[in-house]
Length: 247
Image (cartoon, rainbow, N blue to C red; front, side, top):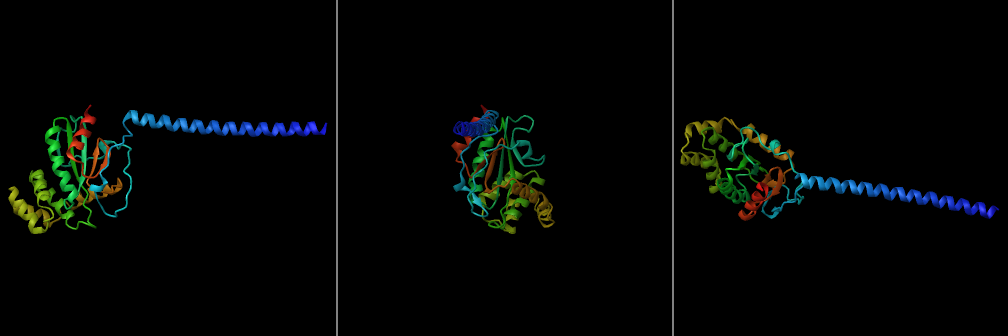
């Protein structure tokens, strides 16, 4: 009788263990299923999109490789009302492309020409926005160049001056900035006063702090409707990405 009771006790113990294992496995399957469902919903809604990255064409401050996030950011959070922009108006644009650039960055220079050409090609449907991310630790003249571009914007010549800066980079000393203003047809007296009084330093610094809050690794960094792409995109890839957004 004692042997039977002992066997019954062992059997009951194994049954409890079996049920415990069953519930643990069931909980694991439920968690896995929830994650798969969440991932599927993110893909379907466009929140999670794997875009190619071009990190070999990226200027970084620290040189540490960090994978760019594939989670989308609300595009309206990436722009302000007075950002330099090309193409479609905010209310009419089907998509928005935001470029964070540095006027002393060779990769930003490469990207700027593609950015400008795509603005001409897709400007009837896409809004192209430029924001400053001067990485002063490696590009000591980038901040002043960004402020100078804002001074040119004050005289309605932002994009002409933008092109001058990138075309002539890395010649970005004070006398260079003034010379580009003259070549662009700006009132140089007004321009020099603007530079001297630091009128737009706070504006450039706000862009810089915002870029850092997004944990951007370097320049250029793009956001295609909130989806991050690092590095200078080749023109065919830039075009293909836009075409996918517009479908």
